[in-house]
Length: 510
Image (tube, rainbow, N blue to C red; front, side, top):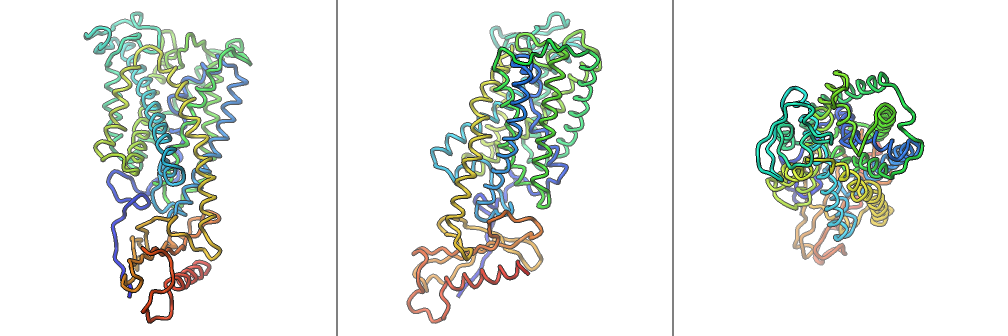
């Protein structure tokens, strides 16, 4: 009466696609990935925030947003387990799919727009800061060249550091395609076409370089001496709010890491420790940098430490900062954008690569000159980072947990209309997991009846409290109803489901 056939993984829970990575990221790989995501382009602007807004307010913001972001990360992770078939992260559930699954369609569109805006803004910031520092490094070595696009269209070269503009860009407010911009482009774009798990080796190298550079900076700050007058307790500006906000934009990247981590990687430990390390690095860089140097007219740390007169070791470390700390973060955010575009079926893979990998480079040209990138950081932090990283995860968590409790009955059954899964995995004799869908004879019930079995796979992985790994679903075109007329066997489809559920529960307990 029943027959089973294996289906290819499909929809959003179990995806087999070259555009997605596999579950191969280990503990240390995820560790450095999270730290690199936390410490991004906003790190260089923190000393300015401490001087402008004062160390008391900025320290409170760093601590507060750090703790809140850690909590929202865990809420987001818990919401992922509420997606049927993903109680132990067996499948792939990206950030925006959670919104699509549990919130309204209108909310999904708004959040998706803010999500893309946040990641694009982060990448633009990394591109601009990286290119500008490489330009200064080239000028320090004797020559820095660029193609000026606006206001004049011409090729220009600077051969003396005194000729460079004192703002973040040595080319002033001109719109240029500089040699530094092209260097960063050549390095990061190929990485953006890879998957997240393929980038882990690059992330490890990036982390080692970042820690080395920060250590050199702290030594330089100590040698320069600390001047308390440069960093007041209470400042006259509120820019710290946006700058600190921007540094905690990593929450929306957590689902992508969860989707590709190995099953035994401890989630709570990884999130807690990396967030704590991020807070410490923010405070050390911001306070020590603010006490050692003066930041005039919104100029960030990278511009100050690459200017003439700074000791050679500090300048060299700062010149390499983009390669280790910024360039490697650009492909990660591009990959996460592509994952979300593809999982929600917004566009094809080529178009997803265009919007996520290439478009930020086009937009970066318009803010490459002057100091406009600092204003972008401030406003992007207020407009996108707050809702996405602090409000939406809480909202999704509340709706997801309430809806899951509502649709799970006392005996562990879950409403098939809520689940809406067409493919799940089942353990084979070889110990692998393959998608299996079982269909009963449609003539017996007047329509096609589908029984979907959730596997009890990977029992060594801790199960999220309150969720069942052994749910059995039954979906009928006529709805769940009594036994069809003419059926000779004594068991109804519903009682068969309950029997199978009890057997699975017994096996798991044993």
